[in-house]
Amino acid sequence: MRSLVGLITVVAAASLYLYSLSLYLPAGPRKRSVRSAEAGHVSEEQQQQPGDSLEEEEPSRLKFPSDLEELRELAELLQFYKTEHTGYVLLLFCSAYLYKQSFAIPGSSFLNILAGAIFGPYQGLLLACVLTTVGSTMCFLLSQVFGKHYIVNLFPDKVSTLQRKVEENQDCLFFFLLFLRFFPMTPNWFLNMSAPIVNIPITFFFCSVFIGLLPYNFICVQTGVMLSEVSSLDDLFSWERLLQLLAIACMALLPGALIRRFSQKRLKLGVQSQNGLDKKVQ
Image (tube, rainbow, N blue to C red):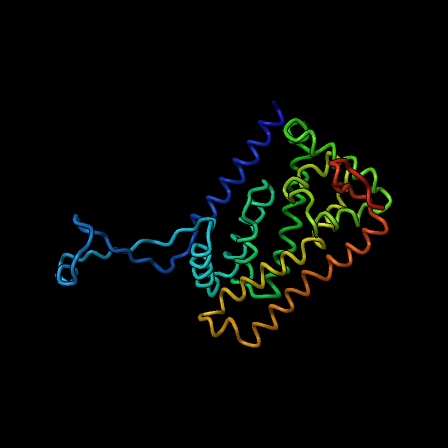
C-alpha cells in the first residue's frame, strides 16, 4: 500500500509540474473559429454585417497529439514559439517526453515525429534517443522502487517467461536485450517495467535502449522532418525524398539483419513449433 501511495504521489507531482509549465505558454498565434447560427449555417451577407461578426479568436492550447492532424497543428505552433522562445520549447518538449516515457504512456512515436518537425533531423534524432533512454531508465527506477509487486501480480506469466530467457542468455545478455529492442518479443513498456524484476543490470538496460531503439527513433524523426517540409505530393516524390526514404529503409533493416545473424549462433530464444511446444534456437 505504501508503494502505491508513493507512486501516486510521484505521478501527481509530475502532472502538476507539467501543467504548471504549460501555463507559462508565451503569447502566440490565435485560432479563428466561426460560430454556427441557430440553423447551422450563415450566409455571407449575414457574416459581413457590421457589429454582428461571427468570428472569434481562441488562444492556442497545448495537448498531447492523438492523430496526424493534431500533430501537424502542434508542430506548427511549437515552430512558431521556437523562433523566440527556444529554451521554453526545449524544456516543455523534454518534460512532456519524459512524462510519457517514465509512466509508460503510449504515444512516444508522435513525440519522436514532433522532434524531427521542430528540431530537424540531427538535433531531433539526438534528442529523441537521449529522452527515450532517460525516460525508459526512469520507468525502470520507478518500477524498482514502487512497482515490483504489482507487475508480478498483473503479468505473472510474462514476467516468468522473461526471467527464464534472461537466465538462459546470461553469457550474452546485452545482445539479447538488443534483440528484444530490434524485434520486440514483448512491448517496450513492459520490458521497461519488468527489467528490474528479472535482475537486468541498469547499465545494460541503459545502453541497450539507446542503441536498440535508434532505428525506430530515426524513422520517426525523419518522418517528422518530411512532415514539416513537404507541402505537396510533388515534394514527396522528389529525388531527395526518395533517397531519404532509401536511407531510412537501410537504417531500419541493417541492425536487424546483424542481430538476427548473431542470434542464430549465440542467443537462446523460444520459438513456437508446429505441435505447440516451445523449442530453443541455439
